[in-house]
Length: 272
Image 1 (tube, rainbow, N blue to C red):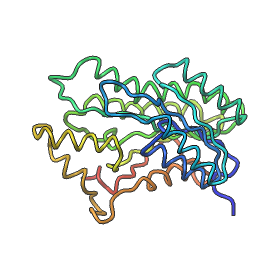
Image 2 (image 1 turned 90 degrees about the horizontal axis):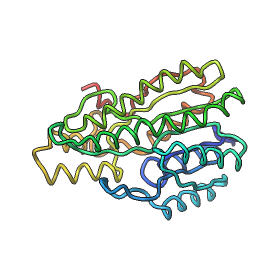
Image 3 (image 1 turned 30 degrees about the vertical axis):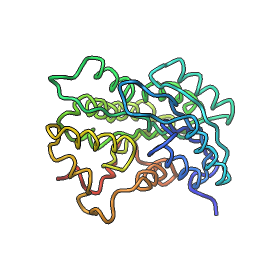
């Protein structure tokens, strides 16, 4: 039995670990070949990021599922590097059908202490980076009259959080940019949607929990929120697969009439 993404090629950013690695495996299980992209080096002001070894492991896991995959390193803040990655992917597979803008970073800082550099980093990675990929992937999609773009935003893109103003601004910006891209690209058969995940256990969120544990002054109840989900509880928390399956839905024929939307996959977190 073929999967819902049989014969499709998916480019996934931030694919070395966490959500991105899981998305790669789930999309491959549904029949997609995978272009796994990650920066593969640390940024000094942040927690440790994915490595080349981890990215290669993701590629191996996709191939073990019977799909083809390649690993490409890219700092998505660099427009020229993004153009080269897209060119390499299209050269290898002939096209990119699905773009999953998953790569992102988070930092915790109050407005009274946040530097301009911290703000720039959040905007450059979480908003400018996806823009770069859409800019370079969409021409090929237009030529073929088909494309599925899924931007991974955040529950922080639809509700405010203290000490995360730079992060939530970028994630909210990604949602609105995606709506505009949906309007612009729709006539060529390209859909653009966002997913706003709730809190998942990933290296990024483990970093936030550690910060909150270290500095109680930053905790506005976040630690409690991050340890539970509103409707499912600690015994059945939000899982990476919940986000990955939502991507499959939006990227498949099932989601053909859905565009310009933001799908909250958060166990109801943002309605409280």
